[in-house]
Image (cartoon, rainbow, N blue to C red; front, side, top):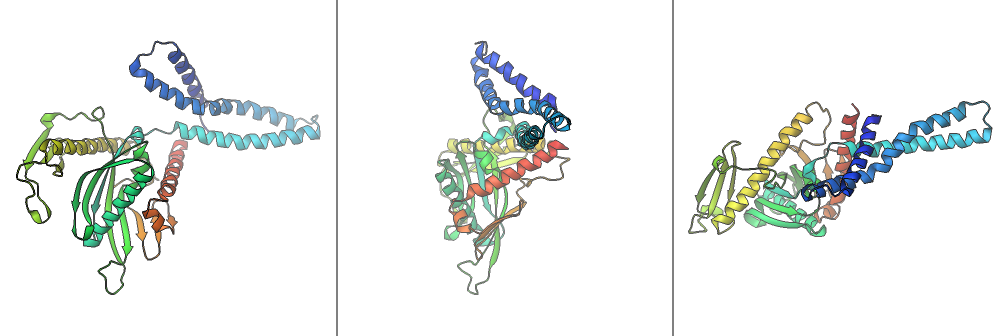
Length: 358
């Protein structure tokens, strides 16, 4: 049951914004923000008004059913209408609850994705490369812009680590459930006995922070420069173009050496650092907000095993929602990525609704 006052607030806020936006008294700075809020309220306004009318209509119909003088035909019609009303009320209430859920401001942001080979040696680095290719294919299909920020390759085409930025519409909301440990079970090409090996890669997805989100004071940074090095430690640059940035208050460290220019490496490093600081602050707020929750869809923790890719059986399993799809090849091609994301999003909403009702 949603408190009537909360529903009335939606309607009164919509009326207030309508007057404000038509008054020409709103400055340009706030106009876009208020217009967006007005547009969001527009989508739920009819549900709010219907919800307020349900109780009165329900009482009127029950009164007809309880009145002994009412004709049978009229009672039958009232009974049908009441059943339909109860069904609509339930659907309406769910939509309003979802609208009233706390919004994650980061959902609309671009994202930075970090993939690292975990346990499993060479096979883990090959799997990290496969995961990155999968995200590249998803990005291409959705017309997202994926740009590599930093990459460290291993033997045989594997990846020790790759960091990339992904830009587009509501990127973080589409990728935020990817954070965690991804486990693979398959027979490596070097395996002569046909035994299945298990290895893993970690994925971290951060909302890309803008200057307005995180202010970094230069005095809080320690910047060290050094020469870029390639595989085996050999120098690949004759100048000190590589950059290591330490954020002293948090202890976060970012190293960047992909560019030949020290300035470009510093810019890329600060971009990653800003997003990591932003995510750290968000996590503090989220932890405080969800401290009392018993159920939560994944912690977003990088150490949490979230998904298993079993190649011999052709299946991918998401452990957070116990969803198994026997379409592993399609998933790795980026074909059914949305199927898992939608299931995870729906489950997250349902858990939030349970918490809202407590």
